[in-house]
Image (cartoon, rainbow, N blue to C red; front, side, top):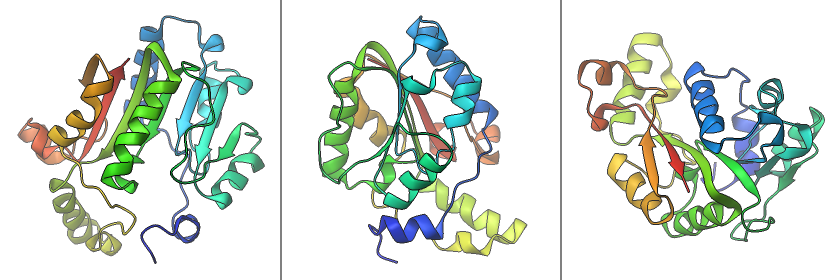
Length: 220
């Protein structure tokens, strides 16, 4: 599979709807920082996939009309709309986001930035900041390289998840704590690491290098 063939990837990997407690806690923290009732918050899920977070956001009190999604795969947009998310839209590659400046209070960008080439990643973060209002919050996560590969090998050896031996072919940019911080720093006044999927090594050696996933709350 071509690493940038996102229609083939949509067939290869469909997302479950399980919401991590750590992500839910981060969302609640972000809502508190925005300082508005949930039903008035406007949120963008950038790289919304198959609509994993949509129903949970509704359960948290966000309004249907205020939850927007962007996705690069036609098939995934269709899946989102099949579950009733009509504000999920197709985003053409390398184009500006189709929203006005400061439209959103929250932006969710989970496991997306690693699929974007380095030069394009800078433009994407600039665009996410453009559509985020002052004081708004970005939630962003990505695998933590190179330790991510160690966790993959452990999953294969200990749990029989043999597909983990091969890294995800759609990952084209490999972030660690420092590199992701450098990408975000020019656009955000506060970048706060947040627990998400720390990994067993991090629990014993609590240093950023050993995190399985990186997850930041970033305030504009």
